[in-house]
Length: 458
Ligand code: NDP
Ligand code: 2IT
Image (cartoon, rainbow, N blue to C red):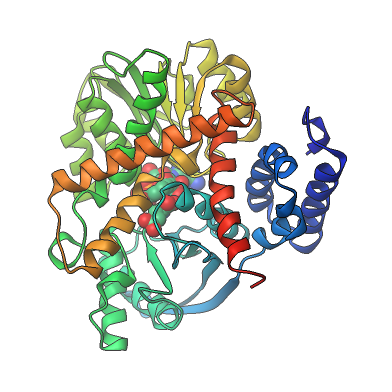
């Protein structure tokens, strides 16, 4: 990354950025996703580093890219045939300057330390943007839940928590869900935590069931929040979602509730996808059928297409981004939308792209959108609704309260508007009007940096 490309950066700032970047590459080789996430944040910082020399004096960059603590552990478990499996568990406690470490757990065969570090690093700034008191962390395992029975999932979760319990706590580190971890897994993890510790400590995990400490609207929050963020970006341009054609990737938690909110705002959502391919549904996605197929039957999008009839077709493999759309909401996984896909979207007239997933757009793709003047919502701002309602769940747990759906959704909407406005105003203040990447990175960084400086060299 040529930080020196930045038009205004001083030589001192450029040299600090290059040092930090090169040191990371030397110390943490083989973690390309982590490098990508760090590089993007560093590239946004020259204006704020130039304006605030104290940040350089405090060696803040070096400190912020180094996790406070990284935990790796063995997770042994037995499948239904009695065979023993050994997976690897991770929890990266990245930064607690603003509050207890907070961030999801991902169960997916692609999980490794670099992936968890990229997610944990993003989480620091995302959580800062919510304005709530939460630090950044992430965890998970290379366990593959696909095709596993309910009993196997439970045994795995119990084994995972049998180590994790000693590192978490409502004032220490508060995990939640991510890819492969939803309400069922949070239930098994919570049950094991409660059994081992003999404590009803509701605030140790978020995404719990409504009947036992979960918040209304947490299931919906990430997808709803991303669509709310998109609506705010469009509003700035005098546009809205009504009558717009939307493509969504993924068909999990974030995707499903993005479809639901986009439809509620009058959009026509025509796609969902999974790792096998995508569905185009000319009449618009049938939300009830999608929910039943994914949430009840735990099926594939191909099953949805088969049942839906003539309006829907399943395309094995291929790129969902070839489907023409006004708005694209990538909601599956990192680097799922590359430069070529971005060009296809732009050629087809896309107006806004907002990241429901974490880092779904490659740096090349982001550049294509920037150059084309497409409204682009970066994940750490656009998908912050999930962790924001998680923090509201912690607040309800601490006060032994349970809010209505309407109250939780109203608070979510206010937080998403505030994140949008903060990113917009920050980008403008630092000479990059309309650039939500710069706005999100600087606004998140400043809040964490100020707290770290105030709390001294720890
Ligand atoms: P789910 O497990 O519910 O769904 C994940 C979806 O993405 C599935 O459709 C899955 O397809 C697809 N997917 C996952 N990995 C890949 C891959 N390597 N290639 C192609 N498709 C893939 O996860 P979520 O909906 O919770 O998470 C989706 C994204 O949103 C992630 O990036 C996550 O970090 C991010 N996010 C989630 C939040 C939350 O609250 N849950 C909050 C903020 C961000 P398949 O079933 O075939 O694997
Ligand atoms: O990436 C994310 O923000 C999440 N997976 C949600 C984290 C949380 O603690 O709710």
